[in-house]
Length: 224
Ligand code: CA
Image (cartoon, rainbow, N blue to C red; front, side):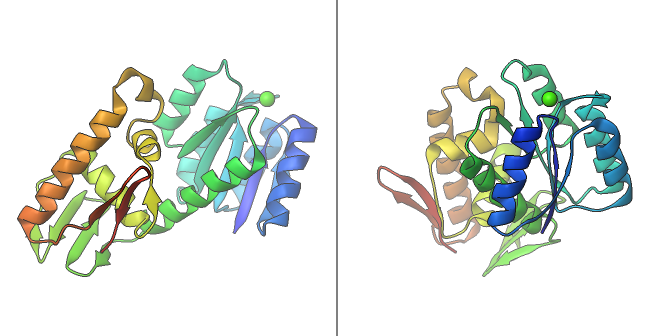
């Protein structure tokens, strides 16, 4: 796993690199826009962690370059608290996640693992779990060859479950995955419950045995 860390605060850059190397990643770093641009133009990375405000240019342009040159790379934005507009633009351009500074390096590592896991799963043409087939690109899911009729959110939820099968997912992490930044504008935990109820019903109607286990007080687990 090769990572690129783009951050102009030298001390922060160095501490991210040291931490991620210690947990087993190969890391390269860039502290300004031009150097980052050159690296992205010439090499492929598994995941890029980037600050958006950089000397010499805007990190959003680096995301655009990544999307053309290295579309398989995961992208995690690390940005200052006051940069909400930039974060949203970054996610719209296709970044996978963001963290607001200051953050714990262990949290960055957890996000990184989740981005890499999701990338590995969604780069597959089809994810097959027993009689369940999920097609990330066309957003289709079949049980025993019968197509499920899912809303966009239900499909995202199913894909999230499938990418994390046999792990407990908390309601919070599901809400954050489905709504990201807009989480606070919704009564999101009730929405999670409703989406899970509908997804469960549709899975059963299409012929699956109920794969969504409720873990009381913790969340949900997808067993298939
Ligand atoms: Ca900066």
